[in-house]
Length: 368
Image (cartoon, rainbow, N blue to C red; front, side, top):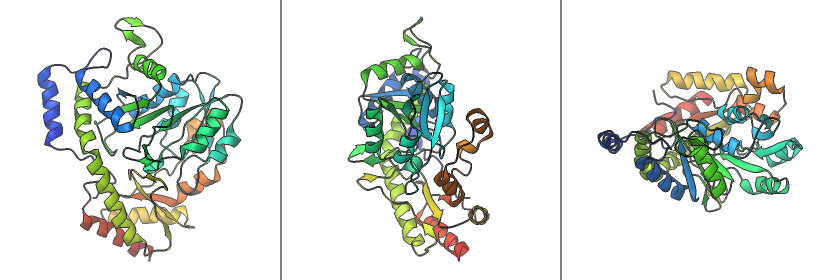
């Protein structure tokens, strides 16, 4: 089976972990051990911002950012439903209400028009997602946020290596949240990062990461235990160096696959954003005018051929039982249509050129 995504780890990561184990410094009470501090410095440079705060999961990064933005009980946060549940989960964990808005069908990211329609006096923040690795167009969202004094928290969990207007994804948001889960473009196994240019937010995020402490045994606010272990940071330092080559391979594989699949007119293929670069976390195609039943048939047949194709996200968050029960039903036509038609194909760095041809030709045969 060619998996949809799989980490690429080498002896360098093994040696980095062994070095940490031999040092005896496995973690740090304030979350700022030598490996974590070095990783944060390098990640901030990569992300084009002043601060990077490393944590133990991408969900922790989202939760901390929502709390740092001042979201509390009764506040609303506008976000897409076409995303992994953690995006909405973080809002609820902070006590806020997720208000789901529809997507732009061209890039599957949060629609600025839909955001404006969802605004109320209770809106506190906007939480767009760089879905599949496409960097959300931030300018219209920034204009809305500035007009209404809202924070922008960018879910950049899938955007490592994506750029827009010459800057890394996340650089123009108040905070950006990154996942370092095993399937991502780079990994620490589990892990996450919040990046920001705001000094006050950075200080608050560091306290939130470790029980609200600025110094040991002196909690200044309610906090959490979201520290990143030294072993994860050591892996992250190595993976960050490899990230450019990982993304380059993904892009090359995406271009090869698009060349093969362009022969079929029933598929809408992914592309690079104008003035930016896709991270190619997922190569997502759309079955034009297709039915969910046909999409699912294709997925089943591809898997029978050893190709790990997947549908992200076939059940949008606003359709999930907990969110419907807690926050009510909502109609999101573009989200619901996309959830029935899109599916993703493997293009990660461990996929060979021969396998790209196999994936493309297999899908063409099934479509014919």
